[in-house]
Length: 254
Ligand SMILES: NC(=O)C1=CN([C@@H]2O[C@H](COP(=O)(O)OP(=O)(O)OC[C@H]3O[C@@H](n4cnc5c(N)ncnc54)[C@H](OP(=O)(O)O)[C@@H]3O)[C@@H](O)[C@H]2O)C=CC1
Ligand SMILES: O=C(O)C1=N[C@H](C(=O)O)C[C@H](O)C1
Image 1 (cartoon, rainbow, N blue to C red):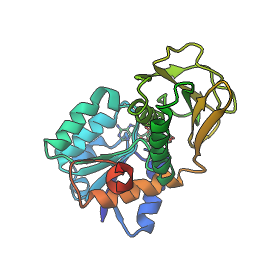
Image 2 (spheres, protein in one colour):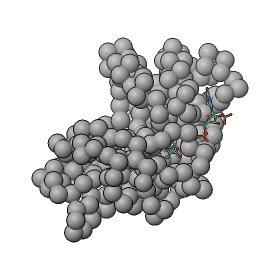
Image 3 (cartoon, rainbow, N blue to C red):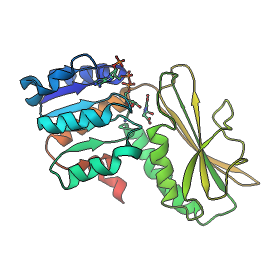
């Protein structure tokens, strides 16, 4: 398959290696300095473009790729709040294709399904309050992480007493959160920690007066995100519309 890369940073470079190792051809690499290549024949020849850039430029990259008629896979975070509905509509009604996920790793995909299942159970137990924390490397531009927002949405959909997430400010150094001291009962706080070169650590914590239940996903490298993005590209070449991990792994729909 012919793949174009948009964004050639930490993710783009690792995706190039894994895509080549799976027999794919990289036909074009677009970074901040060669934006004119969106109009090149090489870019237009791609079966799929894989986009990992940043919250400020992702939307405009999508529009350029759509204009060139190239299907997209993207893991860029932080753009959904402003442009999510418009992009979804372009894909569901406008004939464009984007596979987007806040986290492409299989581990987080499983974690996310367990999170929803646990939230359904905890809906029956109001004596537990729920908090989240996420820790990432110091270069990360957005907070909370896209993964944390997706996990929070999974909780809000399933726990009636919570209806919005808010930025939390009281995480302990080990990632645990000591209470919901500056939150209303209907709010789910997410604390963001930026530390060293951490690849991605997400913790969901339910706490009552007598005990706590903690779910954690800890990425050991970018390997899981990278493989997931390439698998998503292979899937996207054969499918259309607004796609996500529940298309790639239908067990998530159970
Ligand atoms: N969904 C997932 O599984 C994952 C998502 N992410 C997300 O992916 C994004 C990228 O992460 P990461 O690779 O670590 O970030 P990096 O900063 O390492 O890489 C981003 C690259 O995009 C380049 N860039 C900036 N503007 C443009 C533009 N207009 N067009 C093309 N390229 C551009 C940057 O260039 P320059 O440095 O010169 O600005 C940089 O090389 C982030 O939003 C992150 O949150 C990350 C990991 C996993
Ligand atoms: O910026 C990162 O590095 C990551 N970003 C994604 C996010 O915002 O959730 C996914 C992963 O945690 C790594």
